[in-house]
Length: 236
Image (cartoon, rainbow, N blue to C red; front, side):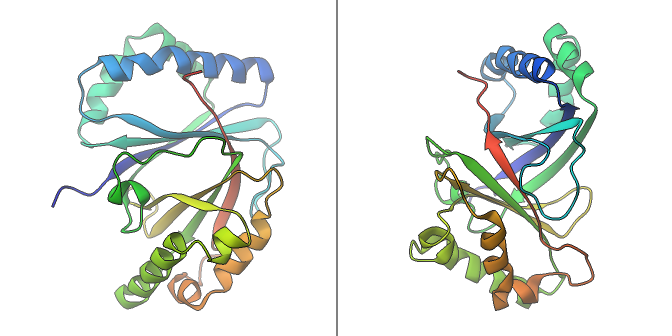
């Protein structure tokens, strides 16, 4: 059996300014070929998205002056990150991009059993996705409760008649647990082609399920947390 899928999840806060955000995306476009040309092992941008202030989210108030970008990198070797940073440290395009970032958070994550790329490594985000729904669960340290949660989520992901798909129109594209920073966090990302999805109703249904209730850490306020993101492409 091979190693489980590993990811680097990066969130970057930028000034919510059209000119600066456009420049940021152009810099990312310029940098992307470097990942294909430089022989470090297995860096692949699986998903990129942006969260605009005021877009649907769970309770927390967005800063109207900040737009956040989400990059989810698939990596084979965590130890390659310092080498990658050293290479980019001398890159003027990266230096310009980095100077625009107000705040950056990085977390290494490892795939959950029902993560689509774990079953099919060639899996990619479907074409035409309009929105992503990211749901972050703070979970308990009870192996039995987490096993029941994993079983429920496996069924939920695979069953096209599940309300997540049949009623709310979401398909599952990513699931991993955080291995750095604040631990005991499960991160799920769903995608939809709908122009007017119902994220509030979606998360309410998901959270009401017994398997989810028993896995949630009830001492954490606002659990789970969720946000709606819009896809970004740096290759077009």
